Image (cartoon, rainbow, N blue to C red; front, side):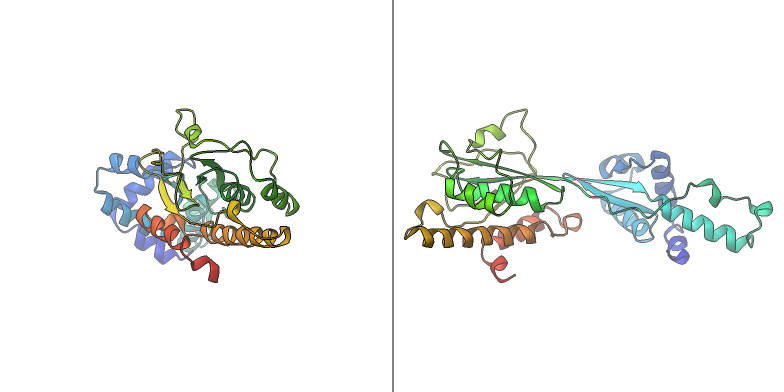
Amino acid sequence: MLAATCFSALSQETRVRLLRLLIATGASGMRAGEIQNRMEIPSSTLSFHLSALEQAGLIQSTRQGRTTIYAVRLLGLRQLLTFVTETCCNGRTDLCGDIAGMFPDIVEEKPMTGRFNVLFLCTHNSARSIIAEAVLNKIGGGKFRAYSAGSDPIDAPNADVLKNLKNLGFDVSTSRSKSWDEFTRTDAPEMDFVIALCDTTAGQTCPEFGNHVVTASWPLPDPAKFEGTTAEREVLLKELFGMIKRRLEIFINLPFGTLDRMALKSRLDELGYGPAENA
């Protein structure tokens, strides 16, 4: 941490008030909207001050779903106070007191991360969406919870798809074909992303999954229409698996903390039309 950066960040009265507010709030932090209400300053101004304090290492932000939480960074405060006491008093605690010692030993925090719910849709919820659900739940590193559904679900997922996923080490024990109506109920998990994996959903209008959900379309070939010998269909199925996995590997590494909803939608739509195939 550079002390000069901290001093520069704290040279503005509003930032000092902001830091004091977050210190009083504690490690649980505070939502950006709540901070704005407490500070009574415009959101654009607040964002500028929060950014300055975060760059100085005095606070940290995390995404929780669609909300940004800001909290004091105790390690940054300890380092700043240690610098002040060591430099100002030359280590003489009889003059300044052991201010830094008031803080417990703190190890560097890992970046705080949000968790996102992602719903994959296709007509029958039998193949493409089943693959995407299984893959994201495995590679998402706990940051993503994947679900799947269809506009006209069939009785059970494609047997070849389940077999292929199982052979590749994916958990399919809970995989089932289900209607997207399950995710419009009041007790359903709230979605952050809804991604359609087919060109059409049986001519039906997609239901509402919330005003803030980010939607995208990744049109992919339907395994039910694969033709040829068993071996040829297996090759096509493996290619489809690769298409989905590559897109999801890019998806989970997007800078979610720095992109707004429109920017995220644009990036997701790009993945639906080829960029992932060259990754």
